[in-house]
Image 1 (cartoon, rainbow, N blue to C red):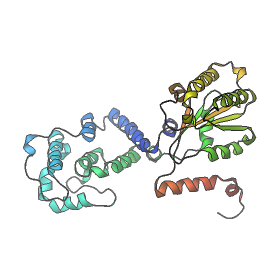
Image 2: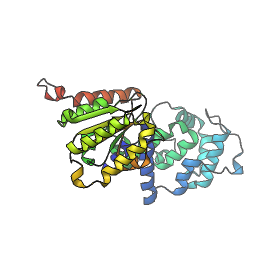
Image 3: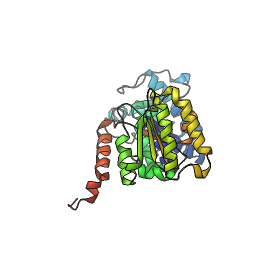
Image 4: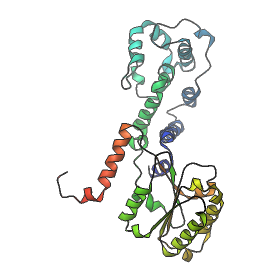
Length: 313
């Protein structure tokens, strides 16, 4: 779980659920509970047998393409889908109700109710309700691997900091509308390092100033934050030399309390070696009501005034 959370810290939101799905399905395939042919069907579909070219039943949204995939599912995976098309032809009302259900995922109609919650249900959704497939995959991960792998925790620097060192940079990967500056300053206050936090926004002519800050901070044990590295493309080569120099420097040359913080939007100019050697943290503006509420509540409960209040909670 710790390794999973560490990797997810450096992924953007749209990639975190994909990573958890890939991890879960790799475990399931290795255990033999999900077959490679079943996984390939969800990923790519299957070759449609010629016997499928018959008119589909009058189920809303069921076109010829979906009906052909039903035939492929029945043909290539007879267990448990041998009677799929027959069931859909004879139970049009039940299948229509299931296909058109707007709410949370429901068990398929009989005789396929027993596949509810299994990977076979995902195969059926791939064919008939592709729009619900991602939701169902996340629910499958939560059932099989636990909520910890289905919902990634809000990043807290106090959990990241123990994994850092004086020669390992911490890189904030930015997106539009995000700014980790306040979070870093609050954490520096909590660590009693606010007076030793040196920040500079990179840009035209700021490279030499930033280099002097790093040299000074590494000697005196200060925290140095180089912000907006993507705006100093011409200086990224020098940054790579600095980071490599920290990694190869004698132990007595770099103060144990020194930390190098970097912020940058994704950029092809940012040194790959620095990314590989660093602790990465994505910093995104919350998307949606739920994400905004979680972020706001997290900031509230982390405030020192809230924690130190004597009033009832």
